[in-house]
Image 1 (cartoon, rainbow, N blue to C red):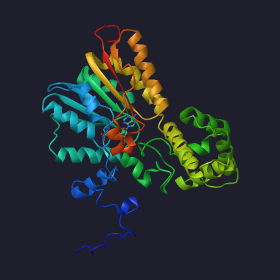
Image 2: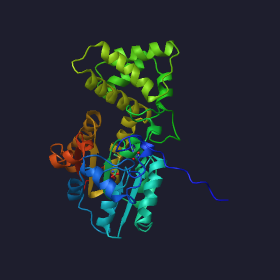
Image 3: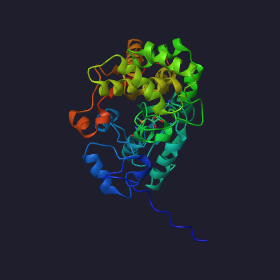
Image 4: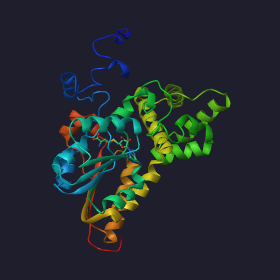
Length: 352
Ligand SMILES: C[S@@+](CC[C@H](N)C(=O)[O-])C[C@H]1O[C@@H](n2cnc3c(N)ncnc32)[C@H](O)[C@@H]1O
């Protein structure tokens, strides 16, 4: 039987606003012109991700054919693809990600472009367990980690990462494991919510927000969706009579959602395990490159690099944080908060 033709959803105005209506952006290979036009305007086509600091990372890693390394955060595969091109079919790259939905799409797209199993493996795993890769691959020439979330995850309302879009308050990188943010809020008391907001995002209104969330819970007011949480944040922020209410609400929502994301995905704990494992799995002269997106992460990377440098396990580390160029930030505003740090493994045996 012939399937009846379904009309594509129509949208109002010149450009589609809702994620599911952006069918051209969601197929950038098919609609190249649309994707290029959106990039030129300084935006990221929905369902894609633009890799950040590519030149800086490639120039530091200096990947050569025959080397073995890990991209700990595959995402849309922008960095992975560039590294694979440097390998020229010799050596091996292991690309890790915890997100089964997006990593499967990226794997299929890059396999279709000819990156085969001989040179590239995708591993659905948390980078906290990166030492498992060393067990099968041996010591590594390089490791890259581009922390946080990808644009595809942020843009998809079903994932609940964005306060701008109505969706379930989920925020899990792997929606098949753990509990969504809405459940976490049910489990926590006022003190825990305040601590979570303060420790994960330095939220100045942590106490007031925790009280408001608890009060909503007592009144059996649901906090199951992104907009339900945003409304609570809005009420708390507006009570403080900020000079620029719109901006204040936006910034507070960003911090609250970031804090919840960090909590739900145990981001500090897994980063800690990753940073601990790094010096053990690199070859002498092996290189580590890490991109971070908020001060909590950057502090952890900096401290770990400095600690192992003092111990003589890293022979060299980035003296200062490296920022994407003004040109890159202008063309991709999502790059603005990026900080890049690197370290080089020394040849001391102590940590092998
Ligand atoms: C900023 S994106 C990476 C983008 C990628 N470099 C690119 O060029 O498209 C971060 C990715 O890391 C993944 N991720 C975050 N934490 C992770 C973890 N602990 N283990 C493995 N993957 C993780 C996210 O699911 C997301 O896909």
